Amino acid sequence: MSWSEWAPGRAVEPSIYAADFARLGEQVSALLQAGARVFHVDVGDGHFIPPVTFGPVVIQAIAPLVHEAGGVLDCHLMVDNPASQIPELAAAGADSVTFHVEVVEAPDEVVALARGLGLGVGVALNPGTPVELAAGAAAGADLVLCMSIVPGYSGQPFMPEALPRIRRLRSILPPSVRLQVDGGIGGRTIADAHEAGASLLVAGSAVFGADDPGEAYRALAAAVGA
Image (tube, rainbow, N blue to C red; front, side, top):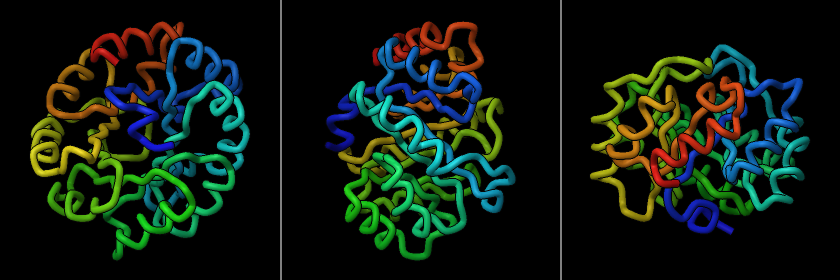
């Protein structure tokens, strides 16, 4: 399967970085019941970003639950050496991986590695990275991820200066390449990000910080017709 089948239109992706890890399986199940099918998994190595987040062990734990319901795991690699981690993530149950253009000298080789393992693949860029650099590295990729916060910690506010960057990316990317936004997406920002050109919208605290994550997910999805 591919992104055209996983999320043919718009999709809100709950980011499990913001989940209550004592209740992770319960919360993922509730979101699957609410209609979520694409889950965002932030993999941090403590170098590219300060915190070490999680990796193959967590993916392996939730992959059967997500896959049984027809869902997918979209892994955002906030790491210095993504090529070294992609095979293990694929074996653990990842469905797609996104690497940062800032740390890769030959993006085409990383794209080919992911493709060879049967994965979807994306290219991410930080707020200070020229959008043209990411667009140029996206040949053969499924998506470009435009960060709307400085990556590292969940719960940061959306950076308004991300909106013109999203618009610029959408104007220069081929229609076949999806545009994803991650950082500060919630009830007050999701519509603006979508209108700027993003069809894949990652939401962490806005979903998992709510009393009812399933209800919060449905509200965000309804706001963009997902």
